[in-house]
Image 1 (tube, rainbow, N blue to C red):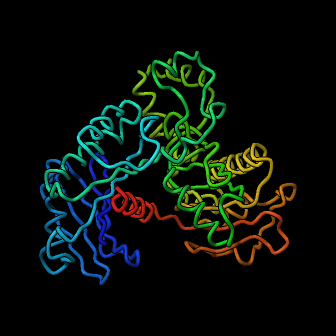
Image 2: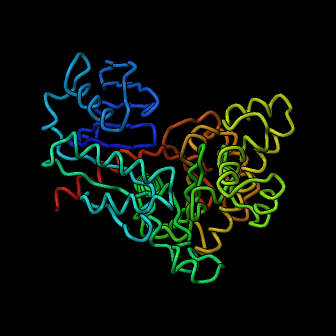
Length: 400
């Protein structure tokens, strides 16, 4: 069975074609600059590539080019799109409507689009891509939506509700939704498999750390709390997002700068975080280099991030009444061994003790990095959201 996985943004269309017989990647690529020109980079498992500028006025033209490179030319991997059994789509916001992987219909696409107010950067582009895909790919090929928020729908009310008047939840659906759910679900199960234990018996803190970061308490395989909230802005300091701050600071700064609500949202989402504090970069690698050169604001930004990760691990251990394992994933979590070391330092009270020799230099590989006598295991677990989307898609179409 071959499954095409789509991750659409407002101006991009990332894809992977997977052979589900052995879960290998046949080809992958990205159509970007949609609406502002167009470019596609396509790479096969054998290393053949297509890297050309194109004309992508909309997502439809991007899908048409995607089909073209998959089925024709030197880098073709299919004789026709009929070889694809299903298409799996990543969708960021499913709110309380979608708590599981769902077969795509016109009604489902409209519901996803209707949720755009809760995720304006993501959901409308997802809907555009879904409609474009239906135009280009045969209607006989089932399409499936996998929602980032679905994994967090197991959070109890006491965890997802805010202290605003209850009518804000009833009328405007204001609550914690959480994000990165596809990643947290994948890595927590992968960790349980690596530990040789049933995930139902484990209490895990999953740290997905990248340009966007979130931490999730996973108890018995279910999310019971997570750091991101109503939007992905909440929680940790991130690349360009400020994370959790006093709401009155938001109104105060908006007044001082004369910003509208939309301008203030842009300020907090795109000009804050590691970039805003350091004044150097939103990229952790640049920050690390600047910190090594003695840049005090870069050092401060790194210290703030480490402090918040440590704080969340401790608080989630408290709500789960214990902790079996901590995992690090995402671009920073998988590759920044100095950050992992700093976070796990002085956490003896939780039973966390790192094996510094194993951790040092470890990048992007599944590995246990805690010391043999550590009561809590610490792991690096590479994430693979596309594979989980493909697995979900396969399971749904085989059992529909």
